[in-house]
Length: 263
Length: 72
Image 1 (cartoon, chains in turn blue, orange):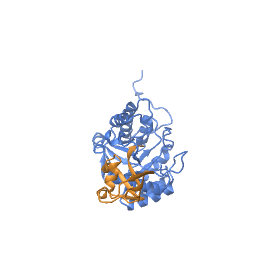
Image 2 (image 1 turned 135 degrees about the horizontal axis):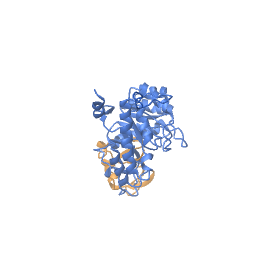
Image 3 (image 1 turned 30 degrees about the horizontal axis):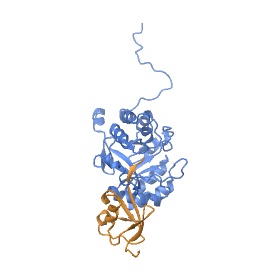
Image 4 (image 1 turned 45 degrees about the vertical axis):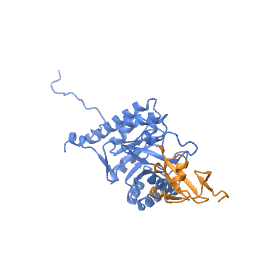
């Protein structure tokens, strides 16, 4: 296949579901559900992450996310944000499966509130239980190539290492380990957390990741809808650059104009 | 159960009184919610949607009723 054909046919598949967009966006922190929906539209995302929370029984007439982002058109990926133990995460996802009716979920088990770093022992334990129960967990994890392998062996359908702490916008702090995870993985790898601006998303894709998941970088931009468009372009550009194959780095200059015929 | 036949239950951490003999679907409806757009956990066990009309609310039940909200 030529590079042109490769770009045109460039899809990725997770747990048997095939997607064209490699950008997954969160649905938190937006000023309104209208803005949220507009940003999702502009991002071109086919998957959005959602949280599972108690219904407000004192005011059941509050607007619902599903009224603005249609779960028939956009795949809802329920997360376990805020869960600090395997048990809490499993309980949350059992409810999510009942609410949504599908098995594809995002597992995250956090270790502490300050860094929101994953607790890998609990994450691995939860992955094992969820897989036994028929879930297909995409798993948020630390940038540890060995830990990533263990998650894959436990049945994770995608590995989602952080590039920097959740909501920090610091950009990828760990290009070497992200690349090691990409090289070792037999399932899709997506950078989840840490992206701050478009170049960060492009960088993740240039490393060979299958996709990028972000929330705050779009939601907290001055113009979230414009940033969503920027992220769509950045993910596409980074992906194309990865497929195109970047030039080798040199330590010194190499002239671009021919030396022959110089006057 | 009280003298008037009503039941005391907890929903999302709040105490509620509901009439005796109603199904979970009726209880959820009574809260102004569509039982088929939420997920219901009763005493820490998921109640499948297909059973919401069949299972009766019991005195002392503890319910969690959840749905999807924005999140990252």
